[in-house]
Image 1: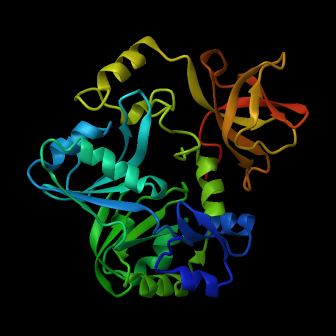
Image 2: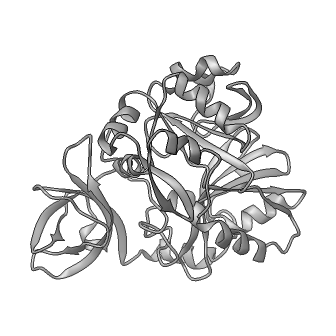
Image 3: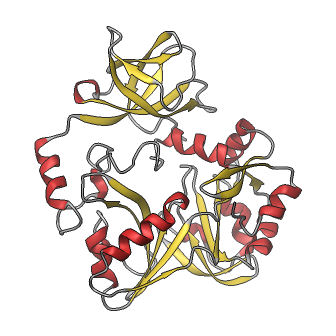
Length: 356
């Protein structure tokens, strides 16, 4: 089991530690609902240093990125980030990721912790243009400072105007007394804030100053309920090697103005339509949908499966995501979630579940 540079810090805070993607990670400190509400209403900080970082450089860096990613990275300028995915050869998704343009001919790819080795091998296998690739995952830490008060509470820690960094833009500069960190206006909660990329030997100083400035430590359990209230996909649950970007509602990051892995088949899929799609649903009655629960129609016939589900702390009702036949995908369509012996009625809704 790997540790992050902050594992001892989390243990000193009496965090509940669990194995996650091969790392010893804090799942909660004071309770999921308390931590969830802190991010929605104030400011929290997550240690997400288990995430992977690849540096792709050189004159052929963009060519490699364009060939393996679904989004159009030519749209990136220095200081901008882009959400994308890595399609596989069979219509599914190797991983979803964020691409940062650091300099001309230099890009940072941030991938999911559980897929670091898989993604590295996949991109390497497609690197026929000899772009320079470096895996920085073991050397860098990542903090997510999230919440509506993140800018106000963190501004004193940087000479940069944090309020001026637009969504999916970033600055490289000073933060919490450390120079040359990436301050990125990205996150996985839908409540605003920043992600801070720094070296492992710098993260403890940054964590201490961030928590002193008023950010509450938040565990991975609240990270999951927060992302689900926004309807953000989680790799391994809502998207994987068997789900296409079109089925998953990621057509908006799948650009057919260029050629990429399996792009011809995916474009044909988009044109012809798909047999199933990922939908968001709310339970009409009490209950908590869980990953793996069956989705059934009015006659009790299985039509799909819940890929993510929880009790929404902000809405006080069961919410979830799952793949169903296209006939059930219109907003206000009626489906049922099989919770033990009961088929609990649910309604397909438009995302996000929670609107700040």
